[in-house]
Length: 75
Image (cartoon, rainbow, N blue to C red; front, top):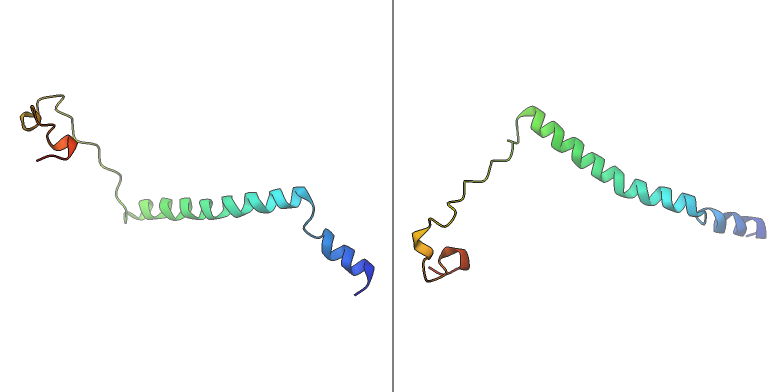
C-alpha cells in the first residue's frame, strides 16, 4: 500500500462534520421511521388513541383511612 492510499483511508472518516452528520442521521432516521409507522397505524385504525385517566376521587376513598390503603400497596 502506498503512502497516498494510507492517507486516503485515514482521512475518509476523520472529518468532524462528517462524523456529526453520520451521528445525527443514525439517531434521526430510526426515529422518523418509528414515527411514520406509528402515524400509519393510527391512520389505518389499527391502534386506538390513548384513553383518558379516570377521575380521581380526591380523598373520598374510604378503604385507605388509617392504613395507607391501596395507594401504599397495603390491602
